Each structure stands twice: as C-alpha cells, then as structure tokens.
Amino acid sequence: MSEQTPSAPEQKKIILSGIQPTGIFTLGNYLGAVKNWGQMQQDYQCYYFIADLHSLTVHIEASKRRAQTLQAFTQLLACGLDPEKSLIFVQSHVRTHAEAGWILACCSQFGELSRMTQFKDKSSKHPDNINAGLFTYPSLMAGDILLYQADYVPVGADQTQHLEFTRDIATRFNHTYGETFKLPEGYFPKAGARVMSLQEPTSKMSKSDTNPNATISILDEPGVIVKKFKRAVTDSETEVAFREGKDGINNLMTIYSAITGKTFEAITSEFAGHGYGDFKAAVGECVAEELRPVREKFDELSKDRPYLESLMKQGAEQAERISLRTLSKMRKRVGLYLPK
Ligand code: TRP
Image 1 (cartoon, rainbow, N blue to C red):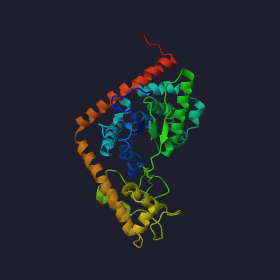
Image 2: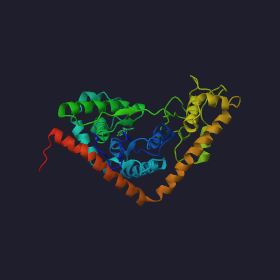
Image 3: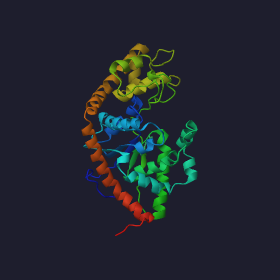
Image 4: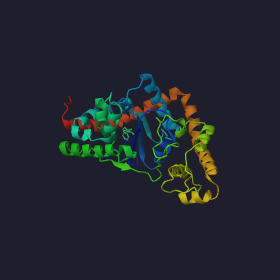
C-alpha cells in the first residue's frame, strides 16, 4: 500500500470524494463540501470526481445529463479545485469503476443492500423506477473509494451509511481473498456547514427545491443573492443569537460564520441592537462577495470547452493508471483468468 503515485511524491494521505452531476451547486454544496475540498488540496493528495454513473440511477434526458456533467466539472474548477494539485475526473471516463463495482456487487449481500436508507428512501419516492442500479449503488461507490486506496472520504450525513458499507465490503474482501484494500475513514471537517433552506430552515437547502427564494445557487448574481437573503424566513424576536427555536437565524449565523470565520458570540455582539434587517443584509453581501469569483471563473471556463475537455482527458488517464493497480489485484484475487 506504500506505492507512490506520480503526483504524490511525499506520500500525503489520500482524500477522495465524488459528487453527482445534478445541476448547479447550491450554497449548501459549496459551504458544506466543495469549498472544503479546495482547502484540503494543500495537505492531502486529493481525488475528486463527477459521479455520472451513479446519476444513471435516476432517469433524465441524455442531453441534459451530458450538459450537467460538463457543468459540474466546470463548477469544481470554479470553486477552487486546482487540476495541478488534485486529480479531477469524470467517473465514466475511467472504466475501472464499473468493473470494480461489478466485482464488489458480487461481494455485496441482498440483505445489507436492502437495509440502505438511501435505497429505501429513493425507492419509495420513485416507485416507478426501482432499478437494479439504485440497489447496487453502494457497491459502485465502494469501488470508487477502494480503487484509489483512499484514507479519508469527506461525505455528508446522508452518505455515512454507504461509507460504513464500503468498510464492511473491504474487510470481507480482504478476509476472503487476501489483503487488497485499505479501510477508508470518514472525514468530517470542522468547518463543514450544514446549510438549510432560506424559506423553510428546518430542511436542508436543496437543488431541487421548487421555491427559488429557498436556495442560493453558486452562480446567482450578487443582487439576486442579497434579495433572497432579505426574504429569508426568521422569527418574531429581534436578537441575532444562536438558540433552539431560532432555525432561520441559526442558519444565517452558520452561513455568516462559515464565510467570515467569526464565532457565533462575535456575530451576536456585532449585531447587538441592530435587528434582523441589517444582519440579513450583511449575510447577503458576504455571500455575494464570496461567490462573485466563483461565478466569474465559471463564466470564463465555460467559454473554453476544449480546455475543459483536455483537463477531463488528463484526469481520466491518470485516474485510470492509479486505479488499475488495485483493479489488477482484485482481478487476480478473485480468480479471473489472466492469459500470459
Ligand atoms: N453517493 C455520493 C453522493 O450522492 C456520490 C459519490 C459517488 C461518492 N461515489 C462516491 C462520494 C465516492 C464519496 C466517495 O453524494
């Protein structure tokens, strides 16, 4: 497991994560995940990819999926991931993923896959499309992670069960066939903010929310961002303080703190005697400033598709090289015949 990858000469620990190409990222995706991914690039060898094979478990038009994949890749770069430092690629461009996913599906039990909360949720929400991919989704995800011998996997709460599953499968495989995989651990950055809907602050901010005022897109214009924060739902009190029952204010404080680095106490004293109007304006402005360079970079990158595609190609080649080492081991271990 001490093999060196060409881009990790000093043996940094490996971080790996994926994100599905399902549209423009929200402020929640940004503050909760992608911004932190950028900050990890110094200290870790990072592998980040667009999980387009996972996205196939939900049916959308082919042209839409294609557009969203390019868009997601562009967004990762716009949010600060640097292809010089990190390996950034599209999952389906690297054939080892599907193959590893199949081998691991054959080590996954019907019972354990049936107990996955995401499978139960998604199949009850889409009873008309309970496809086999939705069921074996965790096996494919286990392959994504294990192929790269990842040390840490930053995931949200909704994916921790899949990470546990990955460790179970890896342990079982190592036990049955001999030591092959490193056991990955979850990575939970201190700064990872859980951003809630601006209109219904008890539920998570979601790309698919039908109320446009509930969600901030990372590509929203500054004026739009400020306006949405002005309309954010709060409560009937006046004090900017983080307390139970003040879900709207708690959410705004979380966002403000994630961007400015200020503690909740500091924010409370900053806005003592000001009321919510000033606070909402300040949060709106700081978010608008934070996202301005992201939007500008996105617009600039979007004009240069050949550049984006050349990065995709480079990323895929390198990812294939790295993941093939593990895949070859897997093939050998399970007894796939290898002609001389
Ligand atoms: N399932 C993850 C999600 O929807 C995306 C994903 C796919 C992933 N493969 C992964 C995340 C491997 C971390 C590691 O959020």
